[in-house]
Image 1 (cartoon, rainbow, N blue to C red):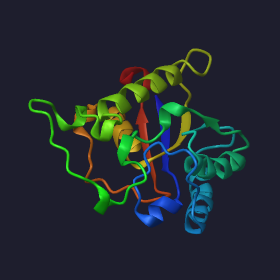
Image 2 (image 1 turned 60 degrees about the vertical axis):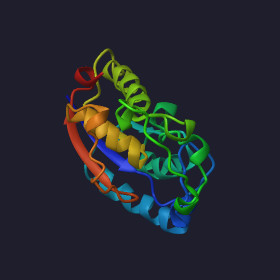
Image 3 (image 1 turned 135 degrees about the horizontal axis):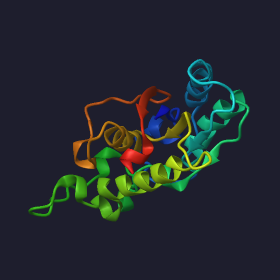
Image 4 (image 1 turned 180 degrees about the vertical axis):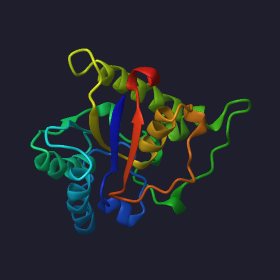
Length: 193
């Protein structure tokens, strides 16, 4: 069993502008986002001991949030592209009012559609299952007792569904994950993967 501390990255400059970010790599934290990351440091450090591994999306906004947390735990952040946000294809960088409606293919669950030519939630879940499978054998063939994961809103919603024993089709999109928010879970990554 692993105690997971899940952290959504601090506010980015594109969050501030209400742009769809997806897998855009170079979007930095805003000044507020840096403060949110700093606030997350003490909250995470109160939940886990030093030397707890900190895994992060390799996107700038997540790494800028993960780095001070990792510093406080006396570890280096471990960037992993499988923790990236959902790829939104041609929608990335757009404002909500610039989006054009796309019809859902008949007979296909919306969680399995690659909107904008990007990734479906099924694709995100497959990445996360791969990450969890590797995590299940990371510590000498056993899952670590604790792990911090810094990622993105939709990716964390899919991860929460998986850790709670649900599928990617059962994500709780009513769950508001604010920038810098922290959620904890106990789960066995081997059972999810």
